[in-house]
Amino acid sequence: MNNLVLQKILHLHQLVETPKSDIDKELDTPKSRALAKLLQVPTYFSTDADGTTLIPNVEMKAMLKSFAQTISQASKFYIDKRNTEFLTDKEFETIESDLKIYAPYRSTFLQVEDDEYVYNILCFDDGDITKDTKEPVLMMTMLAYVKEDDCFVLDINGYSFTFHEGSTYTFWLMDSPMSKFVDTSVDINNRYTNKALNYFVECMSSQWITLMILLQYPQISDSKNVKGRSNLWLDIKSKFTTSVLRAKPNFQHKQLKINMYGNQPAQSNNTNNNIRSIGTAFHSVRKHLRKLHNGKHTFVKAHFRGAKEHGIITKDYEIKT
Image (cartoon, rainbow, N blue to C red; front, side, top):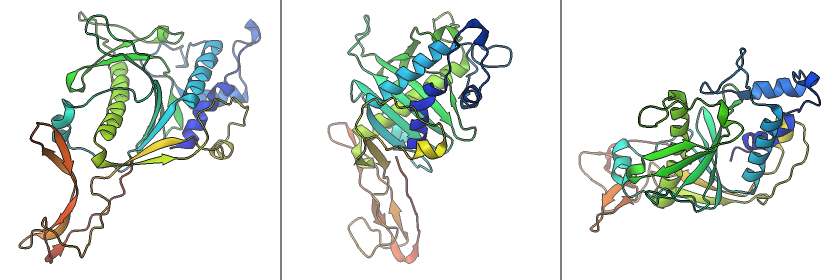
């Protein structure tokens, strides 16, 4: 887990200063300047003339603190997608209809890291269902971290999802002190029209679907229970510096690591029935889908094919998820 990013989230609320009077509404302090650099307002939010948020500090501090507390107490998963080879489009289409979208726990925190972003998603399942279709309702909040800019995209609104067959979904924005600043324009079908908002929600849902794939197809990932501090809320004042935050203990969590090649070395003296001995260079074959007699699909384990006299194709993969 990227503990530095997580610790920044847990301590962000400590940077928010609340004015003691109307005279102090425009605060200009080291903390306020640091906070302004850390928080990037998305384009689908209403802002003032210089592009800063209109959300009152009192409400922002309360929402960030509540977000931090709930993350601390949630069960946690970490997926490392840096330099990752994952499913092909065809493979995803094959398993999509069998995929179940759910929350592993009543309160689940998922951190997904790729080369550019760290997606921090909090998901709730309170057992709610839609009145008409009786579909489960999941509530998600995401605070995305942009590595290049060292900042967070400031949207910790709650979004309710119902997932349908084929991982399609319907979502709606929940009421909160922050939701009134979101562009909620809709079309004649009552669908949100702001492209940036829809893209943000799509990013959130796609990261969650990645978790669902890895949990439901364990053949393509290695799981590891990482020991650490228990999921308790400790609101201890701390210096907001990289060295101090990085030194804070990790939380216990489950790490999922994509393993499409079975961690087999690219060169091996072992032979088996899967080796094609004539005409093909010796190479590794990634895990791939096979349809079972009952119509379901499973992933076939990685293996080797070819003969060394025809050459050796070396593939070095350390794909973490």
